[in-house]
Amino acid sequence: MRVLVHGSELSSATAAAALASVGHQVSWYPYPESPWSTLRDSGWLQREPGLVEQIESSARTRSLNIVESLSEEPTDYDILWIALAPDQRAAAQTCVRHVANHQQSPLIVVNNSTFPVGDTENLEQALGHEGQVAVSLPDMIEEGRAWHIFTRPERWLLGCEDAKAENQIRELLRAFNRRADVFQCMSRRAAELTKLAVNGMLATRISYMNEVAGLADSLGVDVEQVRQGMGADSRIGYEYLYPGCGFGGPNFSRDLMRLADVQSASGRDSVLLERVLDINEHKKETLFRKLWAHFHGQLKGRTVAIWGAAFKPGTARIDHAPVLTLLKALWAQDVHVRVHDPAALPALLEQVGEHPLLTGFNGDPLEACKGADALLLVTEWKQYWNPDWRQLRDALKECLVLDGRNIYDPTYVAARGLTYRGIGRRADP
Image (cartoon, rainbow, N blue to C red; front, top):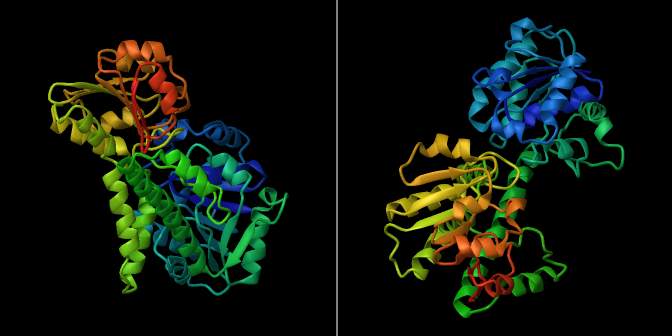
């Protein structure tokens, strides 16, 4: 098929590369303010396993043509794939109108963007031609696993009320739908709302578990035992039951706020979602509060090491990352911070600037700990899971480890001569 992909998001880059890799003739039109010349060197795209290589390979074989403007392109497509950021709705309308006005054959618009519920219908109205249809195919991509998720999907949420359009989309994605039929077909608004509702449920589970962890702290209970007991109940399961120091990311937080907006616009109070968001923002300060409690509020002039700035492992992005809230709290107390992250330091420095109380490290994580009073683990990169505990104990002046992701065994850490404080877990040497 002849496909035009519009957008500069991870979802648009992945769709362009994946569709071209299975024989479709794909034109990729990045958002004008983020052209390919800029995207190619972006940290978040470079960190995505195999994606840049696949884009360049498809470009060499000419199954993928990257363009800077629509005027350079032929004017007839089978599919227009819209994968733009939520604040680029006007660009979506402009692109749809431009392409539709030059079409000689039927066109299907695939809305792969996280726009407000009902926006797929608005895109269809912009088409203005009978037989041209817009469908909703919500973005399910995760950073660090984009290629795998697109090419080996667990499910596609397809919002479509037109049988011919459904068959066309199935054919478009047939190469990725061979093992089992992974399409869940529903109305367009149902698909749009389902995407938001899924992330709302996952965030609610995380925030609930963080509330349980706080209670476990107060009662002297190891929350890991509670988590194991809860997860063993088949009605609950283990997924997204890990307490931590808050979640971030460009999509998760954004989708929650979008869902809250949808509820508000419909005249319904979103008390639960507002509480979920409040709990999450509160949790981003939890390591600071544990540090404050340990040193009885005497933090001025101290030095701490932070492992992890990215909002999650496998990405170079810090959108809504807990480290941003943590840094503000620490700097307000005149604490010098030594941050290690293997990928996200450029993004962090771009966000906070050259701060006099900040030193960055991207080599040996233990270098960041030398002379620090405590280690705060914020992002659970794999290279942090098994440090040399003897060297770590020697590097830290106060031998305090604050584990914001509960990746360490408290008893084991304490046996190495360090004080351990996790989220609902603790152990003394």
